[in-house]
Length: 288
Image (tube, rainbow, N blue to C red; front, top):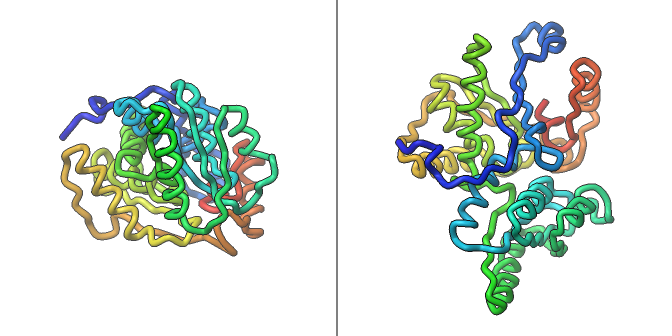
């Protein structure tokens, strides 16, 4: 097995992020519920993408790339965080985004501008169309002597998934220090990479612990997540052997991706009012 610390990685986040028990919520529901606060990772508005980008952008730098491309919806958190991290590393960021959702100059689109990203809207429902446009734009940059690195939607590649293998290693140490035995790991699943990293990380550092992904999109994550986890295992040169009930998906899509569910609002408000934690209605709110 390769030591994950020996793989190329740039330092972007402030880690370890806090890991603690939700005392009020745990008391209300009679469960020991702990939270890993990756919203407090110290980059932009935080979130799960930073751990992935530490590995992905290290790969980009190693290949001599000066420009990074990625994509998502118009208000993509992943795209915004890629822009922030690329700027920190002195790289140009180009964001061909789906022309769907809120395309007015609001929210993350303002932040994309602040971080110096170049945004281009693509009128399509297919990411294959966007990847083709990335190839075209990269070819134009190559004529100027520049080199581009492509990150797929959500940064969900085997390399990106290593960010959450490392996260499990991190909170395993925190749990041991707190005297806590973890029984179940749950996260939102929007493109699969985070959940894949949690699945492989659980096998390496929390054997026997079940992983559940809460699907906020309708992609076939039962297939996507294990495939990404297996690819990450190859990078670490470790076996990836499935066991019964090691992983499951529960879908909570509602009317569709990025469309808030009215029934989630009381629970989002409950966590805010009992623990002072804000969730969003697209990912964490639906998972919660």
